[in-house]
Amino acid sequence: MMMKKFTQSIQNLFKPQEPLTDDVILKFLKVMESARAEEMTCSELFTQLDEFVEREVNSKDAEKIMPLVQEHLDMCSDCCDEYEALLSVLENTRE
Ligand SMILES: [Zn+2]
Image (cartoon, rainbow, N blue to C red; front, side, top):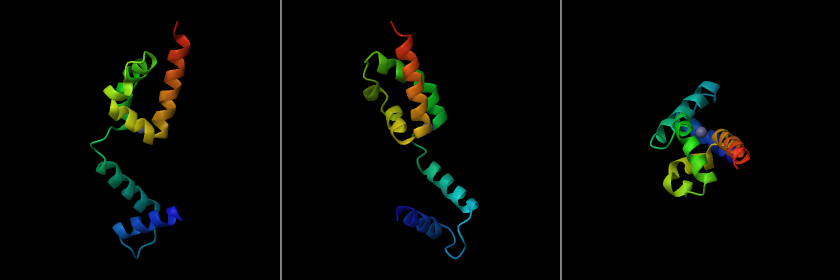
């Protein structure tokens, strides 16, 4: 259901008569990406992930100080995996 609606809105954005090709989807994803340009990109996140995880481990209000990082982690599963991996490394090397 949702996927159908999503597909339709992509088709409306571009040429409705044309079948939805991978090219069109990629174009759409690029548009989506630039629309959230003010948010953090994955590579920007990686530059701050160390600090974020360190704050998290030391309970130094990571989410309050770095809300954009938190926001990105909530919506990007790739970065979230990376974050969790880093977090468990730090937790295990603590003491
Ligand atoms: Zn990401």
